[in-house]
Amino acid sequence: MAQIAASIDFQSETYKDAYSRINAIVIEGEQEAYENYTKLAELLPESKDELIRLSKMEMRHKKGFEACGRNLQVTADLEFARNFFSRLHENFKVAAEAGEIVTCLLIQSLIIECFAIAAYNIYIPVADDFARKITEGVVKDEYTHLNFGEVWLKEHFEESKAELETANRQNLPIVWQMLNQVAKDAGVLAMEKDALVEDFMIAYGEALSNIGFTTRDIMRMSAYGLTA
Ligand code: Y39
Ligand code: FE
Ligand code: FE
Ligand code: FE
Image (cartoon, rainbow, N blue to C red):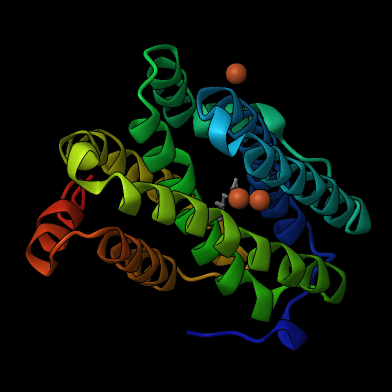
């Protein structure tokens, strides 16, 4: 059942306990996004300045979400969050070491950005006033990050297609596992799992379409890991 922010007790122990993990996930996610764009700036020298600009935005997001935690007097469970991201983090690292730019872009600029866009849009209507203002500013930036990946991959579509399919098959199931892992805590924050899945799939499907995949490709690629 959908809830509105006015009926949520942001100071209850139950809320703050769930927030200690969700807030940590976004803080750690923003930190890793900062590192990932810094790495991509090295791998794509022709887009270096733009990627450094994106990485700095991620660092500002991290600071914003740290302030959200302080505002609610919540201590973020960063160990939980590092574990939460560990598989995507490892896959990005392995791809970066192999110079697999397409896989790096799929992981950070498509999958993680779409996950962020879904989560932040679902969070905004049920956030406390302080966090809502921060998150509204952040989500605008995330569309810019997604757009960077879309534009680059569209320009290199034919030679990237096979690697994108492999990277999708490897990483999309991980997202569903992450979503399942956080569904209960998200529910405490009045963020419904079904809405998160729906918004993620819309954003990700649109991204794949913008890059050049057909509807048939997108259906096939989206099916990976749905039962994870
Ligand atoms: O590009 C970015 O800024 C993304 C790193 C930030 C991560 C967002 C992760 C959101 C998952 C939250 C799950 C709550 C239900
Ligand atoms: Fe961000
Ligand atoms: Fe690392
Ligand atoms: Fe981002």
